[in-house]
Length: 257
Image (cartoon, rainbow, N blue to C red; front, side, top):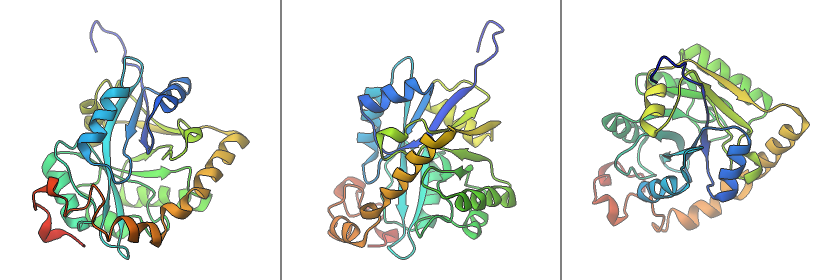
């Protein structure tokens, strides 16, 4: 900020799974300033390339990784923004958190205690010095999930955030976090999150919003099925599997498969 002007707040959708021209167009029409792009099972360099491709003066696309930690029974999703080096999926939660901290990334807990893929309150407390924010509203949640998420944020004294968590184009911009400062690049967002900058959790109202939320929830089926996990993960073919040559064996001792 310069010239004595008051910084405009930034409207940030802190987690989307899809990115193309339709996503960008919808984000702009919804008045968003920033999208955080964190697709499942894609390596960081590719995510970074796509984020650069779709960023422009109207919309900043920030690359991120939602890392799938643990094995099938103990899987926990953690969102890291500001990584410089790739981190694979299917490593222990402890190893992932240590790597995020080493790289100075902002660490977010999406959809806490949701189904069997999420960080719980006890784990939040264990990693309280690493976690920068917890999601208190998610379109895939039912109302009781959102109430529980808000309680976790309050009980652990952790800043809140929301996102569209869009797997479908129609969900982009349905929920966003409004910060009290401008966000013009990834470093600005990381700083806002790590500093605990003031923010407001927002989502669109009305029947249309509730319908789009229901469609997102319905999309969960195959995405979280054992058949998909078995086909993609246990085969070792997933691009973010720790056995992939791109990781140079760095995570062999903390791999869960």
